[in-house]
Amino acid sequence: MFGRQRANRTGARAGREAFESEALSYLDGLYATALRLTRDSSQAEDLVQDAYVKAFRFADRFEPGTNLKAWLFTILHNTFRNRRRDSSRDPVRADSDALDSDMALSDTSASPEQQLLDRTLDADLQAAFDGLPEVFREAVWLRDVEEFTYGEIARVLQVPIGTVMSRIARGRRGLYERLSAAGGRYDRLSTSARNLDLARAAKTS
Image 1 (cartoon, one colour):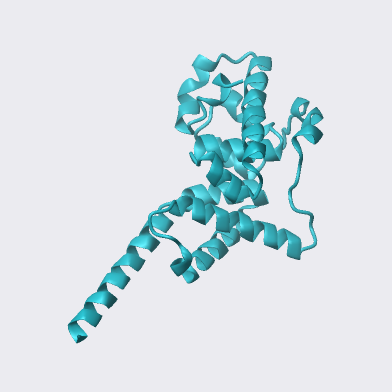
Image 2 (image 1 turned 60 degrees about the horizontal axis):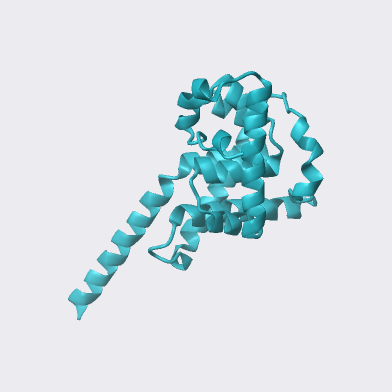
């Protein structure tokens, strides 16, 4: 009996270590997303730390065999939304119809996200991506960079799948239009785009 108990404890400990090891392997992606959400490196670090604390504390709620990465991103986004709510700041909300005019505007200000992407993106592609409205950029990032399914993105963002699909389609179209307006050829940008798996973005408009 005691041997079985020791074996169970050993198995549980091994499972916990495997869970934590896999969870930590997604640190870079979580931090990049936290930077986009907070636009501040110290706040991003704090947000990621808080998300990991919650994930490890409630590890027993994770269903083995499901997508741990998506589970962590959901915790991250929920934590961010709760923080904004607690600080009496309105959560990021935008309907597609309300963003029509925004597609013509470019955000040229420097940001932590821009500094992060600068190491991997071609300048034209980076400018096009940074110029997208926040909700489109977020959806495209989760789909084309983090490679989540539409259903997973819907759970992370807490919006209907139809809204996710619309934001991704419009975000990709916005990327293509911005690249075209800048005189960029997609085949010239494909190497940089492939580094972040955005090559599909300009091809689906």
